[in-house]
Length: 554
Image (cartoon, rainbow, N blue to C red; front, side, top):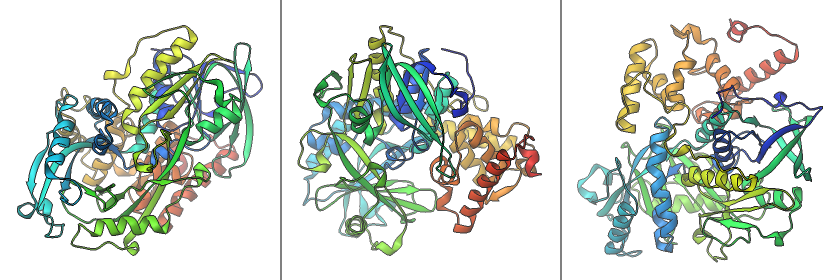
């Protein structure tokens, strides 16, 4: 692997001459950054461009689960479930700060599925892949358990099983950070406008824009031996309209699906309400339409509810939750809970477009979540990612890097199977890892002993967000005063500078809704204070100030 280097900014690429690389990756969602990370770690020169911020769209709009997909068993997608289950514990070990095990309560609805079918499905779920530290499923008498307390008394029997939780947008940011430290150039707010075959490879024109104003700034020309199209919902548009690869071009497809390469855009929407229960388990409910709805503990004070499956025919970036979806989620949840949920209870909502591989299924919920990697050497080497799901991003990235190697005629060794993501290394404060849950708890305990001035809330938030990297953020910090101005409650300049310097955070939304979910806890005035801080930094940069970062605030 190449030696570590700091994240690159768009200005690191020359605009007056072509920048030469082995692979240009288009798309800064989970698949794009995962592929860039894997390729860079194998020693290839990589440039990744993303038209917006990292994880601006689908990859920050998930249900935020690392899971095998229990409901996919009903559609006989055993291969997809096994693949996801095999990845589940691999991912949980790779980043115990942003991923952790989560237990799910499934109340039994006899009108939907018989109990024997649920037991069989859960038995398969436990045994399709090896489990090392996740507990298996068990039956539950809801009326005798605290887990049944939030539910109506009509629900008497249930089951409990294990999956995992992930901070999806931080997962994307950490993969991008890892890619950059392996030598990749990560260019956010940089749109791929033109890609043409050139000298046996590709010549791409990338347009940069200002993060705060949205105005176009400069254009960058990149010359690449191969292009990876990981544009998510825009993948088909990228391949046909930008790269000008015709629909009948074919290509070699891997992933268990035909190589036709068609996307079906399905919108999934979520709502957030004030906390509905006090324990740490999540619920999985069976809707009257046989879909499932999750209710998940979220951000300490809230409950996350979702999701819907609605065909999306508009622009991928314009997805928004509809009143009918809010009503649907509230109605389905109210069937189970003692406390009815109403649209007026919603404090936040989000929607994202899932780029699913079209399998001609009539039911949007039944469309496969598997993926297809399609590649070809004509007119020059390219690979397109069709579909996929969050849990299998590492495996998808590994297979994509293998295929790129075949295209370039240079097979190189896989490396991510036992690699940690940035922050996943906790041994600067703890002994050898034992269990992800125990490890992060011990890390938090020792972090607070090292920095007794930190309150428990800040210790938990920073250790969860940054893991072992929090020690870099705290380098030279001996008291709260060393963190600089408190721009918003518990959000200090030291953290903002860290996110700006290392994680491509250039606006308040980048910090408040993607690098964290602090925006959910803040008032409008507090969110505006963060926006004003970024505006002041941009103004200072424009005026040519070059003082040290913290000195500007003191």
